[in-house]
Image 1: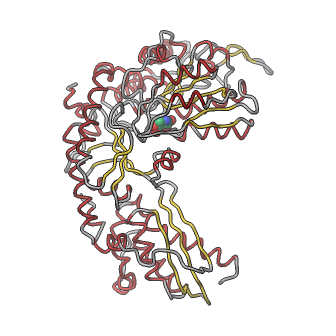
Image 2: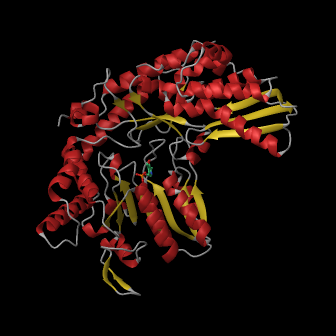
Image 3: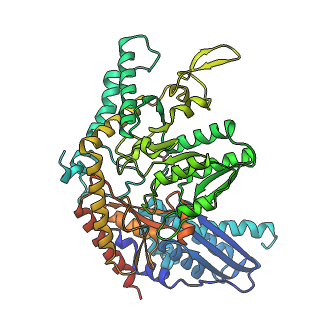
Length: 148
Length: 407
Ligand SMILES: Cc1ncc(COP(=O)(O)O)c(C=O)c1O
């Protein structure tokens, strides 16, 4: 059973041309995330205002699944409020658990749908989730420094 | 046993009903087990199970004989004439932790130096870090050069007179490099340091002669040489094993016990506290029988020619760089493909039923030296055939294409 299909064109395109790749000049916060087992590393940068992620960017030394997922996260999250991001977080976790998604949930996921095949590779799910776990850490730290 | 088709001796490789035969190229992590090993372990439990060195009945005698004859086989396999120089352990990791504990308690003083190398597996780094913190000894590291070798004259000229222990690998699990252990042991001996050799990646691949090598300690793991998991051995020169007190106390390791004091058993038993891994030792004996029937010369030449063929074919893939030497190497080949992360390569190969390792291979310092976040590693063993290399290369070429088609 070839796994080539898991690496869809959309996924490979986000890996080759990651959106919002790089650093922000004056971010409110940055956060490192890592999967020590496989060596994926990302750093996220963000500017926030009134519960909205005004701007976001990332750098990664990571596999295609991790980089593509981070790129898709930024594309979805930039300019959006935390609730919007949280809804997508729930959908993303459903997708990774291989749960059935409704039509409008699919629509909301947009390019992230291309990560669906990763749910068939349990050891790689954490690669797709790294950006999300890093975002969680970032939110916690934002709370600590009273930015939200 | 047909050398051309040894995988037929290995049920996991032979009896699966996958569409395509499983190509197992993660042998540096662990190897598959032949019927003879599986049967030896199962026969022990079915026919001979009893505790060793304490059961006053015939079954106990039988299990003790089997356990001790596995020790003799192990001694003969790495060429020591004295069975008592073989301590059974869980493998390299336990052996090194055992030595670190004993030596820190009974040999090392604050300010002393333990010399390691940049190429070591975490199991030959972390135990020493633990004791360094605990008892104020310092760690120093031999540098890697070129395609992954040490510079012997640099080791001698940089030698810190406070060095009491020199612990190094015989072969690298990442680069496949085979190091000149005789010379390294000789340096340690001349400088008055205890030498410890990690044989995890060498014992499976070629004949070892600890007497000729002149090492103080040598250790290896059974599971990397077609034996069971959870069993390995620590060879120690008799004089040293006798000189040091044990690290663990319990049954089998004592002669007499009173409430406040005990008299320790003779070597090697004083280092084997508690009920040992009897089935594992017997399985290790069966693994040695399997390899010896093939002969270690044959093992070496089979894996060598396969690795040479793989290296030749890998060199034809665009944007692929092999890390490590071209010759004087084992069957472990680490490589990097431009623009494709090792984990993606491994997952895509897995889709073709080819198992390789991707990551840092429990040797992060080597990754830093290579300036790579991770590598992909294909490691070959006796049951791999040229067709496995061909399928592996075909898959890599397809993966290359898959990533290239996105512009
Ligand atoms: C060079 C080297 N040393 C030590 C070890 C540790 O062996 P074990 O996990 O069997 O204790 C390994 C296994 O990966 C190894 O490759």
